[in-house]
Length: 221
Image 1 (cartoon, helix red, strand yellow):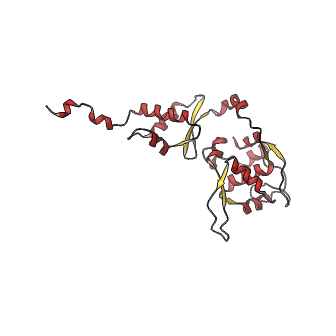
Image 2: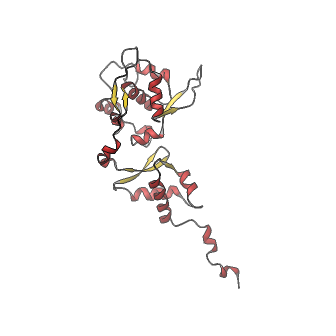
Image 3: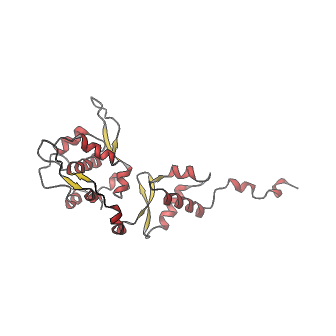
């Protein structure tokens, strides 16, 4: 008698689980992970032969209209509360830290002009940028160092992070609001614009007026 009859289904050990089961796996990983997870990370955790990208497509469709959505953050994915239900989490998400006007303006410039050097930030704002402002944004992990610019001195550039996109509910920097929305939110004031964003004031020392960190939600739609 053939060995195949003695071990039926032996080859099935190498077959990928059904797509429904793969969805459940992806759902479990995203639910248990606070930070966004890439497709490559999902594939590394799941059994051989799984297609996490396809599982994500089905899972995102299944969560449409629910209180929790599967959202894309940069090149990764995460489970997040539906935007229209964010008010329910207000007490848990309010931050007591303060962001200076300079920090918010610097963050906006980096987001819209990345990769951008410190000198370029100062040129757009029309005022100097203190080391403390940059350090604060780096500590919050909302900006990071980018590639050095191929100009004399090889100055370092700054770009926004995946954490910044995640915090403000953006898939990519292309989803940032326009100047009209920023002015309506109070980020851009009616003062002479020294640069493309219309951010800044008279040349001189940096403005360190403090603003509640909660106001950084102005980036949201």
